[in-house]
Length: 135
Image (tube, rainbow, N blue to C red; front, side, top):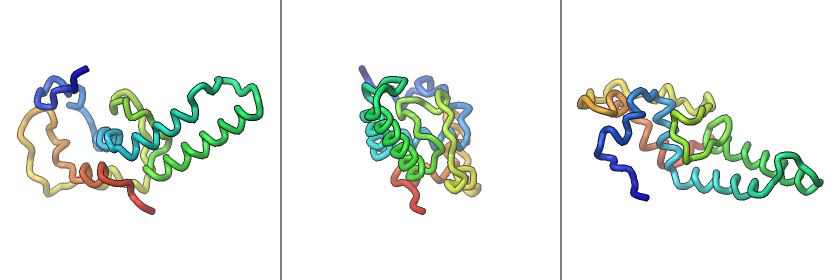
C-alpha cells in the first residue's frame, strides 16, 4: 500500500476542522516511542479472552492495566489509544498538566489559506512529537 500523498490537500481533508487537541494527537500518534509503547500493550493483550478464565488471565489483565496507566502517565493522556486511528476516529483525553490548550502561539504568522488553516499557528507540535513531557 502506498503512503498518503502529503502534498495533496484532499488526502488530508478530514483535518480541516481539527482543534489543538486533535493536532496534538496527530503528532503524538506518529511518535515512534508512543507507537512502541502502544504495541507493548497490544502484544500483552494478544490472545487474551474477553472474560478471564484462569488466575493467569486475571494476572495478565492486571499487568495490562498497570502498563496502560504507566503509558498514560508518560504521555499525559487519560487512556492510551491506538496510533493507527486519526483524531476524528478516537477521543483522546489529555491530562490537564499537558497544557495542550495553553501552547497556542499567538505571535505566529498567519498561514497561507488552504487545508491546514490556523493549525500551523501552533508552536507545540514539534516539541510534542519529539519527546514526552517530564514531570
